[in-house]
Image 1 (cartoon, rainbow, N blue to C red):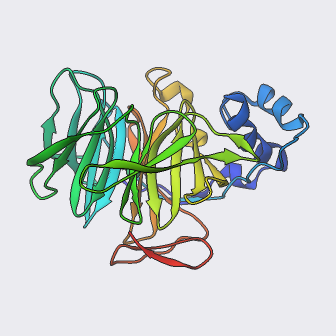
Image 2: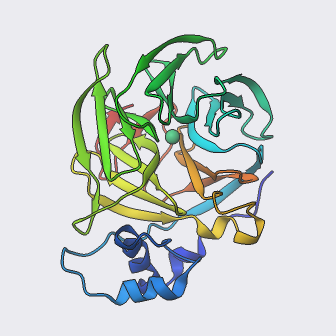
Length: 301
Ligand SMILES: [Ca+2]
């Protein structure tokens, strides 16, 4: 289902809301739309560590239906196919989805004791994290056949791949980088905005060496320089899904997939009825799944 294109209203708002996005990072409040009064107080507060990153305007170019029971924890688009990892013990799975209809084309449930989390593609294979079990699973994208598993230290929240390394969030302000056959942690980077740590990093998506991260529990997405951890800008998704249409307070934005054919980001939320295609001012389509880093440098995903 397509919706009329419209520029995100928030993009056209004043610097008060712009600072609201940055204010969220230090206050734990939503970054816009849902609790404006306290957020404006934060916006007016003096800053001692430098300016917060600005809001990034975006345009919604499509809206697609999806399974409203999907507690989205991971989303990735790979070779023309959309894959999702869902959470909640007893309901967790990995699934392949028809982007345009939301129909589940294939799925593999997780053991009922496990809570599904981040999902990404590493070396052509799907890698799915779990929350607190320390287990991660490898699948064949063609048929979701499980090819193996491995242990990963710490909690698993979101995941993506930067420069061939598995990047994992764990709900803190840190991005952890794993490499090698044993998935050993080789580096970690703290994400900061205006010099302050951004806690609650959740679902991730890399476009080159820029990482987009949902920030839990909010409707904010941080655009992050993966090398420095600095937040470069914020996407505010609060306006996409009215609170009145959400089943409960857990239904926050989560799930980001880079859609290489159009250069767009596909985004959704836990239990949201729609998935949205967002065009940002400085991303572009690259059919061979190369990704443009803002600033012009080219990296292979
Ligand atoms: Ca993702």
